[in-house]
Length: 200
Image (cartoon, rainbow, N blue to C red; front, side, top):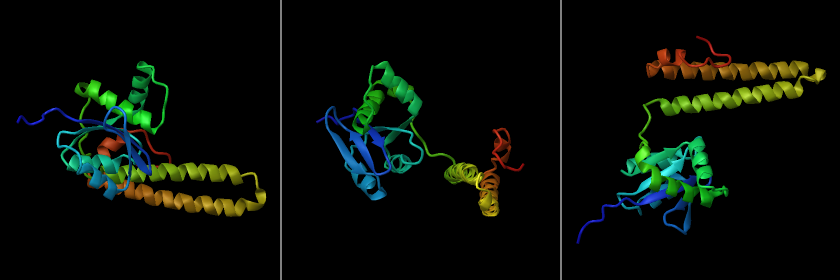
């Protein structure tokens, strides 16, 4: 009996709590997005499975890394590209199930144009997390400052709070510079747009 050599294409819509999985034309399976549930589900897949997921900040990372370690081919699809594809086929619905089916269809038809995901360089995850947390900190600082600025009776407390946030920001920047230095990325970082509040 000949061995099956055709890849199984799977589209997965990832959210914080769960994965919507399009494995065949009709049924959508829902899987918890914790590491153990992902690991158990991946063990049920054939070795030739190909998986397409949309880039979703950090929520897709656990799935992508585990699937890659399991020897599966994984494609991380840019959200803008996926939206353009949806428009090109006159797709309007946008929910977890329809997105999973769309990713499966996209993979089936466009796999030759896609590049399989591979792990980023060592240190990338640390840098990504630090930059994300710093961005959120700066956004919070701006909101707090704008919200309390008109209350003169809170002026001293507002300024003390802003100073404390700025102190945390400096600590994050120090850690970012440490990661850049350890990975020898400082020269690359100099060519990027400066961070607000960063120091050379």
